Length: 326
Image 1: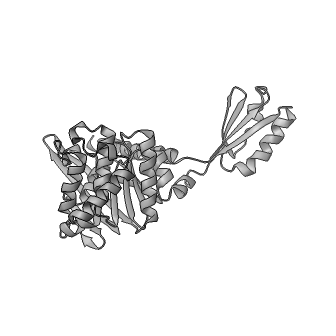
Image 2 (image 1 turned 90 degrees about the vertical axis):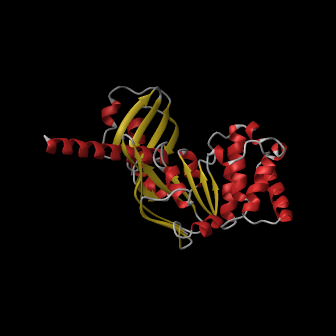
């Protein structure tokens, strides 16, 4: 559905070159929610702008439904509903309704169909109360929702939402997430960008982790979490055990043992194998177990590890280069 091949974007500045996207190759499938996850400045917005034909790549190729986005930019735009954080793409002295009507005519929608479509979308996004309000008076969250409304106008097969819930209140954010699920259930393909790790884990079929313009990993959230190969077990105890129990609980399959008051926190490779061992040790000390909670690794932990590892590699390369020059 969307394919990038060795995609690179370099911005030239007075102080030098900035590599926003570095040799990115992705294959986004029809009907999936694919999320590009990364911190601010990672290159997420640049990537979606290239895919949606707003800016040109420095090198590499991008295809949407088999169409080259550089050679077939007009055809590609009809296939995509784009929502970004750019407020300047709307007319400040027009109302929300007038803005949507103007952009709808650019898509070639007839007057009757467009009016009906706008009414439906404004209800869907809880913007009916602001339909006759000038855009300049919209709050940041309302502007974000109007951007999503514009993306929905021509009912395209592909949606690209750049930080769709940023600056939106919690209730509106929930409704945006519900809308994203509805679009997927309707057979649409969705490309999202976010730095919200919990949102990415909740919504995505697959995730690409982007840092400093480079793709560090691409997989399902579950498969990415499985790469960490450990679980955290929290055990609530009837009392604080004696100091010597720390040594008693040590074994090669337990990576970390920590007491937080009467709670024991243990990081293990396999909780099923190790729980019996731990329970027996505690019972010998006459310590009752009140509650056990097993926590799988989160996508946030995967993200932080990958970014940290990438930083360590970059620093090692820098040291190596410095050594060569010396």
